Image (cartoon, rainbow, N blue to C red):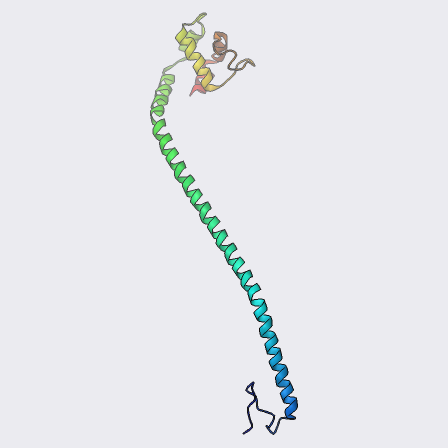
Length: 172
């Protein structure tokens, strides 16, 4: 106690428990040089670390912006899909009424009616057109023929009605 204080806040060489003043001075210079070297290394490393951190921050911001952009795109697609659904439901409403009427008409058909139509050798054009439309609706080619090649063929319509009960069930 009572000795001088050195630059680093330690008791100076003149303290009784210290050895040689010159040795202490060299230690102090070494410590100061080490501290300067560490400070210089940190100063040199700092720009590189700052660059790395800045790059990471920018990458994160870019990723966040991409997520936000994708969320915006998804929201727009969802809105467009909802608008399309509303439009389709509005446009299909009258068709539902027509379909309901058609199903009611099928319900009043009986096996005798079908047998009578099937027995016609040369049906009137409206019946032939109706049978062609029915076959096209159920999309069923007959006897290995495509729908397009025999669409006005009365024989195909008669084949289609060969099992009247099954045909009525298929129409429903």
